Length: 315
Image (cartoon, rainbow, N blue to C red; front, side, top):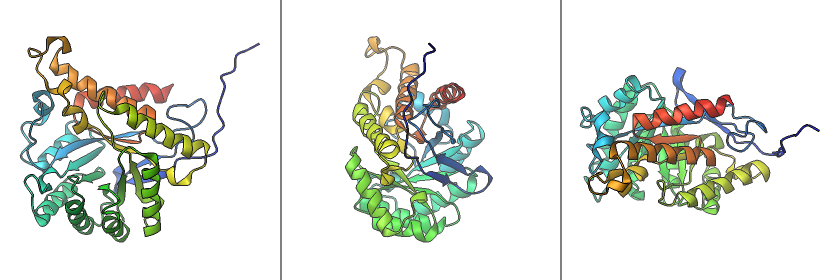
């Protein structure tokens, strides 16, 4: 008697979202089974990777992470163009670290000008990610939405404290929002409901469950994402049937294991390989949990993940 692989019957489907505008817009989502269970369902849209760009020279990056971009870190426009032209980035994520009131506290209009220049310089989808200060992010992202109204940006992180301001601007100027909650499936669902009640269409929402790097809370993120996909695909929970984005690079590269020199702790091995491998493994874990969009940093880590995606999607 021939062996038959047991198969689940899925009753739900992840909704599709279009990111960006024009010929290089990308569609994500659409899965009808658990991640990479191609024997049970379909993944019509490949998971996508955005290369991150900082709006000011990054501090405390390890040398190996900084090396590919060392000539452009003072110019976010040149940095973004390098990501696209040299490294083949299919998306760019502009991290607005300079607007943090506890840091450089860059004025709103100055930050908006930087975003507009980057958005005009590239033709791939652009993610604009705030500093994590709810009030400042609301100010900046509202103006970004207005100034870049024809770009279909992805604006984040959108949280319960500022979803009304940013959500209203996303509706008015037709941008996608990254709904961010602190590793909790119930909070994630609640924020999706609030955005829907505000009037943000589901096709303009992508979910950010927040994540840690490998060894730093990854199991919590994985569990929440796994529960999200179970509810979405087998329990017909429509408020969780949305694509997932994971902003992982800065979580990986700030860890001790990614930064410490080999001579300081020889048992950790070559630091030129260590951080790259940590970023690639973190990314793959998140993909296996259901991520549709990853924000990554190092070109070699991205290359490793794309090679693994090619193999998984060809099987």
